[in-house]
Length: 330
Image 1 (tube, one colour):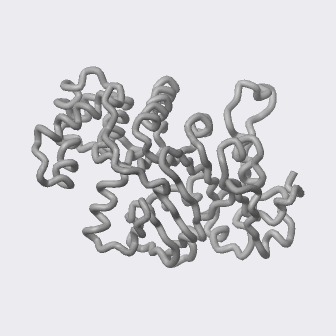
Image 2: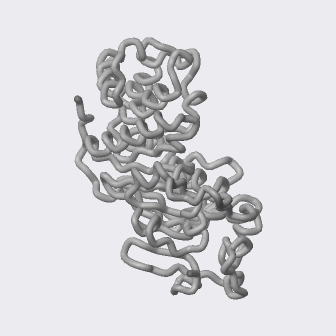
Image 3: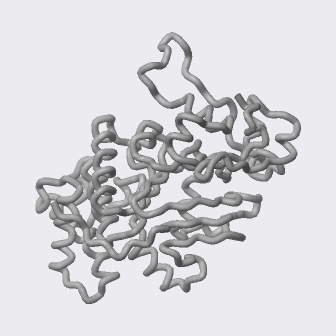
């Protein structure tokens, strides 16, 4: 099976330093810092409204009109994205970043055949390429994501494809430009359990073959545990804990991370006990706290937690933003 040709690899594919984003009410994202290397997968986890999708929008330079980046850097393949002119930014993103959306139903144009949707962007960014060359690339891409009846899919409209098939088409489309960074937003949402497992296996296979860095936003902790190398835990616009998968799942430190891990489905759960829950919700006030953004919901909260917060380096790969992270959160 064909492997997409790769450009010369840049080890550090994505680097974000102290990214801060605001709207008229205050912070939307605050001091976001992370990095992702070639052939690595990072997952963003956290409740809805925690800042995961807004961080994706900042990386893709599609922040809402009422939101602005006020501080920080976003580097893709070593290039600071926000220093580029509009056309330069469009080309940089179009040729180095592949995006697989959450809503596969609405993302594909209902009135265009799959072959036209897959080839138009490729021809746009490679102006000298011919339609037939783009179609050849599309065919190989669909084969790569496990589609057998390639010609039928290419000639189909989105309404003629299943949800799982649309997901595969979107993944193949995202890889058309041989990106160094692939971004996938909620890849297993709205899919049944069988298809979810197939999608996870597909991503693992593609990562091994294409040596592309993958950034995933997901609420599916089973999927995240299977596919991720690194995990960033978001809450109220901040990363409260970040580390290797085994550090986050096996040795979580922040009270919010521990609460999330308790929600992970498991066959070992006591069926006679009620399901765990995180009481309360993320509020706008949390985002502008002087202290810990989780303090209003934290069962371990002390007075000093509402007044200040510190980030502690647990190891070279593990950081946590909690003043009680010296062991007193147990």
